[in-house]
Image (cartoon, rainbow, N blue to C red; front, side, top):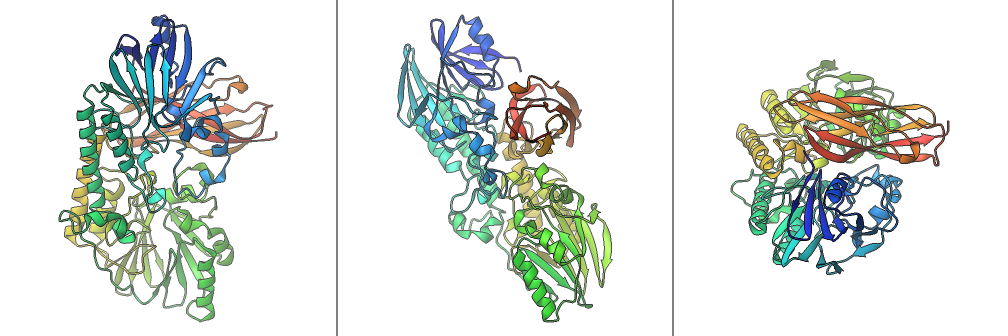
Length: 609
């Protein structure tokens, strides 16, 4: 994308880099809004501007905050509700609650690597007079909790710099920033910030701006049309989510407005599980005719005590195999203690095993620091015999991409243990961070086709006591809904496929976090999923602390269609650093010639040499 600028009025310009930077000009001086791309300096030079006196930011995300040092004489203004995420970012990066057991995502981790000096903070209604313009601050949460819009009255017109509330007519930049809980944690809040977003857009509309200028996106000269189209699409997309959402089973009060909706899948009745099963917490346990036990997941020490009680009562002789459905903390927290207590074989799908054996390498929802030993790693379709039961393991990217499913055949039943992927109400895709991909042979489409093929007599969810199943018509309805979602969500984003806007981890660093001694060389891999139907070229560059006095060369690779790929970097750590501990390494990404800025990050934990 070429960097260039547009003139909106006599005194107002927009520099188009990987973000839009507003340039309010008064002679040779300027006030800047969201100067997130250093190439704006070329526009300042072309306009004859020699002093950037003030810089205002709409929200705290790293990709719209300046990537170069700010001169001491520049005033820096930010939303009052987000000042900590500009001036005290170390409180985020060093707090374990923002690293492990992630059920809440506010503030978002798209945070600067280091703090910047803030001179001014703004609340709703604040006004700034600068040159011939008057700026009014509107608090407009949605994309982030503290986002603001800057209204600029200049040259007889009013312009609204809206941050990332909107991208274009009917479009937003991405969806995962709208993950927010209402009566529950953010984890259950798919599109939970949509109401805030709507209120903020209406607030901007009521100010009657001439044009909307987003941080990411295009200038919109018909604000009413742009807002109406976005709200209409969001409502339709949300309806297509609710219509088959498993969350209707867990939290029916969240969806009362949709009760009895004729185009939503009805909630199934459950059925009793076979008598040789036991259910404790998130653990399912199969008792063989030999009295041996096959256990699935262990999220709490109480599970260990309950199994021991079964041994005391003579129901279970010993635990001989253990299966891990997925990496979420309420399924793995107590596995190290379980493995010490019951020294049996631990089995997991290869994608699950990658996370649970090295959780520090990932940053994902509900992730636990507990490390699991895996004795047998299964591939899709691997089978084995356990006493009178035939076990078949599957890669099962349902509730999360990192998930396995297990078919258990025996004693007159075909039982499918689906982890947390289904309830009687539908699919468990209520957290966008779980990577619920849309499309052919991925995500829930893959899972539903497997259920359709296997035809289990019983499906089990780790959180639900009754078993259940789905009719052919219900499976067809869910598949049709997913196909419609792929279309309507693609229309919502400025990408050629919905997954770019929904899958926060389509670009990711591995390992996400690593411990490295001074003087050693860190190995970092940037991994990319190409969700398009054509090859895509990616370039990436890790951004090292300026005090290290070095740069890493840019890496480049081409990713095949609908495939994952990436490349690695060797990063020498200086022999001497000012401080040890956690260092944030942002990674600057360009995808298919589209600059994305410091789009992702990794963590180095520096130790003494």
